[in-house]
Image 1 (cartoon, rainbow, N blue to C red):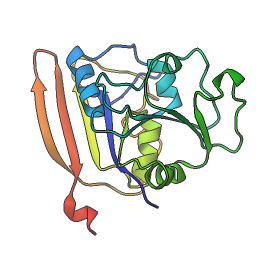
Image 2 (image 1 turned 30 degrees about the vertical axis):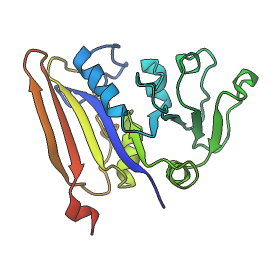
Image 3 (image 1 turned 90 degrees about the vertical axis):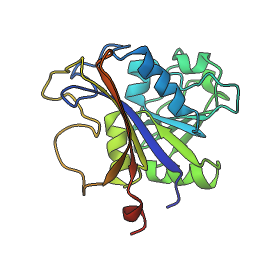
Image 4 (image 1 turned 135 degrees about the vertical axis):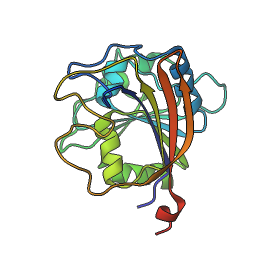
Length: 218
């Protein structure tokens, strides 16, 4: 399989969770964190997000610069995007909906020409992005299940996170950065700390990790 270089970004609460069991409130991290989110999008040829995160956060997957906008890619097992979702009402890159389940959902005729639908596994779509669409850098913004799927494929090159010490998300089933807590990943993946920026006034710390070069060459 060929694939783009893949980076991920998440905000993590003090107890290691990315959301509560009944979904997090919007805007729970600082304006500085939001600015960092937009900055991390700058080098991406395509942005990737799971359907649940797209819906919960009302994401448009855009960035403020006037350069060529990144592709906007949404992964779902079986659900189409509602025609009223903000992603269709904000200028940005082409929208790609990837259905990984057995059956394609009905696509509203109003969306014809507004998105491209793919019916394939995530792994095959990553190859498609690289070989057919020329994507070199893919940036994923969650959720945990999607990042877990990428980690299982050993397909994460950079991991960015905002540690939000001001918030604790309770709930036994609240997910972490790699999804639910029911089982382990096939193996550990070793990263090196590349950036560490605590901001005590905000109660947040911005960190970035990169894959160890020695491990990538094995």
